[in-house]
Amino acid sequence: MKLPKTLLSQTLARFDALIAEGRSIVDAGENIPPTYGTNVATGRNFLTSPGYKQIEAPKFVEWRTKSATLLDRVITRENIHRKAVEEMPDWQASPELLEGGISLLKAIKDDLQQGLLDSLSSQIEAEIASDYMAQAEQLLSEGQTGKCDHVPAAVLAGAVLEKALRTLADNHQPPVPTLNQNGDPKTLNPMIEELKKAGFFNEAKAKQLRGWAAIRNHAAHGEFDQFVKTDVAQMIQGISNFLADYLK
Image (tube, rainbow, N blue to C red):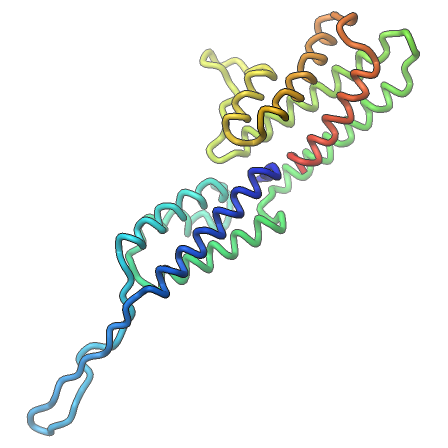
């Protein structure tokens, strides 16, 4: 799974906050000293209860719930750490489990920063999308001024954009819906709205995407007088930048 830059930044900040919160719960724990008894016959003392650290159970439950929610969004069903995530809601309040949870958050955060949670299939798809965009650029450069040779480039670039948006939606946890209620695939604009609501990008980026979607739709429906070659050139460059920021 590859998160867009803005969402990645927000997610990493959430990891930092929960790591700090967990550490504060541990540090605020009360050290309960050991207790001893005395053997009446020998007069010797013996240990009746070892010392331990007691943490506040309500605060632990809050931290556990928030941490499980975050990890459930980040860790896919196929990930090796998925079992630990699914077991977390059943953890009892103990400093040992809390320390383990903090270490888990730190490790997953580091993997996320290093891109190690990205699936190989997503990386391959990003490379394929890049190749198609290169083909779109070639189609555009080989066209003749005043002709409609830029139309195929617009159609190809638009198809790459649509596939990229569907990939982003499918890889999100939970997946962003890409089908209408009747089971038909959503078109570009509804998908853009769904991804914006999911926090993938803001309204400014959504507006750009709608503009590229409009060019693609004009090209696909033979409305060639609604856009020009320079529009397609800007579209190709914009989609290439979008793929680099959101898909790779």
